[in-house]
Length: 79
Image 1 (tube, rainbow, N blue to C red):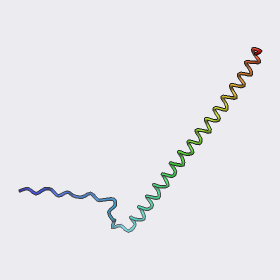
Image 2: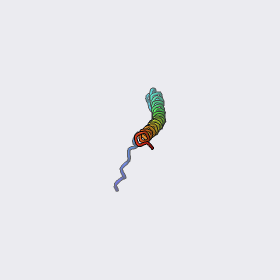
Image 3: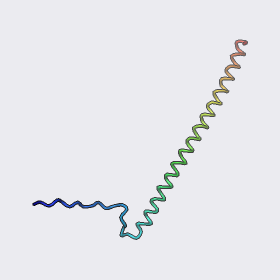
Image 4: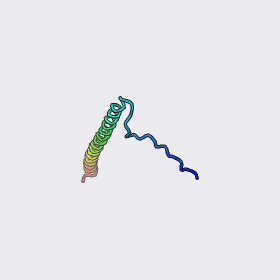
């Protein structure tokens, strides 16, 4: 009778390594990932602030333009 084939297990990332510097590299990699995540979060927060500043400036310029245009219309047509 045929025997079932044995499966070879893939190397597990959590398995202890034989390389003594592997732990330090793993710590460095995790620190780098955490710093990258923090940089992305800060960049997103900064982009939100820039968006609202630009929107406020555009609103201000729109109001100024409307007031100047209304003033010119009143002067031109004598309203």
